Image (cartoon, rainbow, N blue to C red; front, top):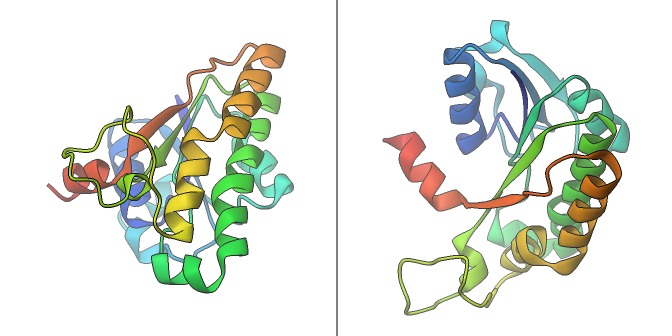
Length: 186
């Protein structure tokens, strides 16, 4: 199988890339290196295809998705301070970038897109552990854009429309990023 990992040079993405390569999969990484580091991919750099580009570029998304079976979408601006100082860019990367990936996936006949969410969407809730049935209560621009990325109606509509047009599964799964970090670190 061929996988695209967006944000694949980041902490979570690079662990996913290493695991996929170890399992014998072909891997493409799309990362603009704004938060990720090439060093995170040092152990697999000769066994992956690396594309330096942004999910804001429809062309970069198109090139990255060509021939892929699955996409693990982790490209995001996750910094709360950065999202507070530049909420427009955070929103664009986290939401518009997701739509770009969905439409590129459709054009490339990708079987499934899985993307990460964040428990920050739930704010300071006393109910732990967080779960996807909780109401979102984002407290920062990052949390708001993460909520939009995983739960907002426009993304559900875009995913369903992409699936309806091209037969791709409409199962866009939100994964709690903090749980992935814990398992990747362990």
